[in-house]
Image 1 (cartoon, rainbow, N blue to C red):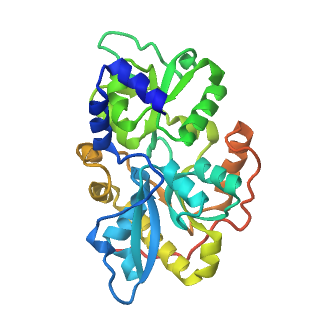
Image 2: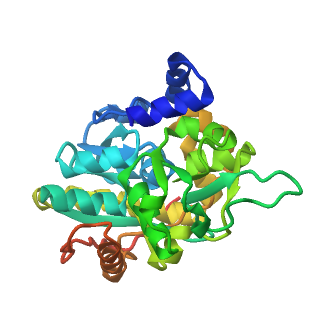
Image 3: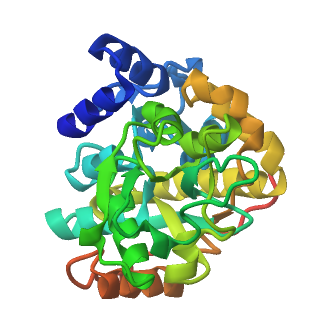
Length: 352
């Protein structure tokens, strides 16, 4: 990562002080330590059970934000102590290493690989889906000047190019699978992690030829005129099939076994949040303002409509199918046992 940032700094001719200032405006420093949300809702009211819940500071964690801000956690007896992680990769590592017992959202392959690496078993509670109408990831090229034809028209055109990615293993592994699917040897492509704050400017300056990233920097790149989509379809669902389960909220199996009542109430809270989100997507997106970095706020209305599956809509076959696809693509090293790992809660009515 240090070499990648030095390369970025060289291309942009920025001082290290400026680089640090820009990065800090987008995300907190990359570390494995969680930061507790400063929300006043984290006070300790009587009669509620304290539960530490990790969340990634990304748009994918919207059900956690809504469950907290709409009071669903508290209505179900949970005093949620929210712990912030800068991205799903850091959160996934913390979950796999037992630093936090439950949290979301984190990309599905991050959680699968973490579980396989440490042996820590999860209950997969709720799922975020991605498709053309509910985009999560963006494969971008520099904005094509008027009257000109883009150099990169398809994924196949990435051969020999430099592609910047959102700095998690999930994006590297998925990009490599996308390249293989389109007849491109990943070794022929230079893949480099790029801090989200630098992505729009680096693509605009052609320090990279393409960018594969998540919603906040992806939307910012398009909105500021730095980049445009390569094709109109979301690449990952096209490769791995639909519905594509992009990310998950998970609970440690051991913790759930020791706390079955709390597990049920946490799941109920998330399900209520998801019912609210799916019924009121535009209104629900405003919750991002309380959790995402302020630099993202002006683009929130341009974020795609999110789509989630409740625990009772979460189908075993969806996760089993994507696990097989990831194994086939080499994204996970061996088969993962998901028997009894998908948690199914009780249906909830539409919350207010």
